[in-house]
Every structure is written in structure tokens, then in C-alpha cells.
Length: 280
Image (cartoon, rainbow, N blue to C red):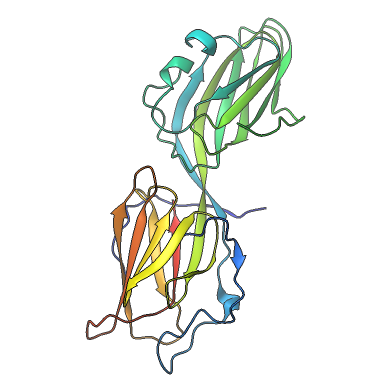
């Protein structure tokens, strides 16, 4: 089970200590014995001090409606029996047709799951609901059963796939109308260790690449925008007088990049491995 912790979203800013991310398809410890020296005569920290990767972070929000089938257009109306429907959860488009808040609820594309209050109403017969990530096999377990006429309201944790319509709801019974109010969402916090030459040495799942374009200057490319993420960097050294700074290159469809700059006290660029941690 992944650890859950709550954080406050803050903008990415330059700072002395830093953290963030992981690499696409590269989870776990790499084979080299050491990520490289900080400088001649300096020693790196033991690998046993590496933080865990992939912690889940919960972000509560004011309840926000993404679905109200009573107001849905076209195929977004009442849920008939044996209906399976993809629900838009992230982004800013597609909410009004399914009866949700126009412009969405501010849930980012990299959200892994949501917490929600799910209500059925005007139910013609008894039934149950199953929720699962779009594109995956439907599980057998349901998250709520409802009764004819009286319906139900239940809290649910619902996992998402990596698409705007990342949640699928399956209804058996009814027909019934469905209302979904999101109360929070989960994202993944990642840690990566970048070695002295700019390679990803250890990490999770959200970093596409890492490099060292020039002496003392590193770049870490994420698979999502870094807007609203808290990023911290720490030099991988037990005794170092170097300073580390970060800046942000932006986001977009490809993702966001974080620049990391290592300098000595005289301001000269120096190469050093470092730990980057990001909470988004």
C-alpha cells in the first residue's frame, strides 16, 4: 500500500534544496554502485538513504460536480441497465454535456484517482454500480448498491486511467440517474537521483529524460506540466559547500522541464549528483 500524505500545492520556484520525479519505464535502483562523486575528495550519501518513490498525495477540493445525468445531453442521460459509460474527470472540456460543472473541477491530467460522493436518484429498480479505470477490465466488486425509488448516496475512491475520460461507470439495474461530486484527488509524488553526468540513476515513473547540457547545468524532463508542483533539490553529498538552484521551463502537451544549476561559493559551475523530488 502506498503512503498517503496531504500537501499544499505551490508554484515551482528557485530554491537551495530540491526534489522531483522519475523516469519513464525506469523504476527502482540502477546497477552502478555509486551515482558519481560530488567532487574530488567528497563522498556521496549511502544508497540506503534514498527515499521511497511513488508516494500517493491527496489533494482535497471543495465538492465539485462532474456528472448529473438529469441534465446530460444525448448519450449522457439516464443510466439504463447494463450501461457502461466513460466519464470525463480531468481537464476542462466535456463536462457540460454530462451535466457537470462547465470548465471542470481543476483535476489535473496526471491525477491517479478521485474521492467522490456518488448519488443515484429516480431509480426504477434496485441495482448496483461498478467504477474502474477506462480501458481496463471491469472488476466484479461494486462500490454501491441502490434501491428502487429511494436510491443511495455513497462515498467512493475511484481509480483513473491516463485520459480525460479516465473513469468508467457500469450500471446494472435501474434505470437510474447518477450524480457524482468530486471531493478530492490523488497524484503521485516522485523522487529521482540524477548522477554526476546527468543520467537518471534511480526514480519512479514521471520523468521522460535527464541530461547535463553543460558543466553544472542539468535538465529533467517530466511527462506532465509542472505548474502547481512543489519541487525540491538536494545535493547528493554528505559534506558539500556547493549551492543548487532550480528554474522552470514550462509545460504543454509534451510536459514540463526543470533546470538544476550547481555552483560553488565563488559562483563557478560544478558537476554533482543530486536528488530531485516533486509533489504535484
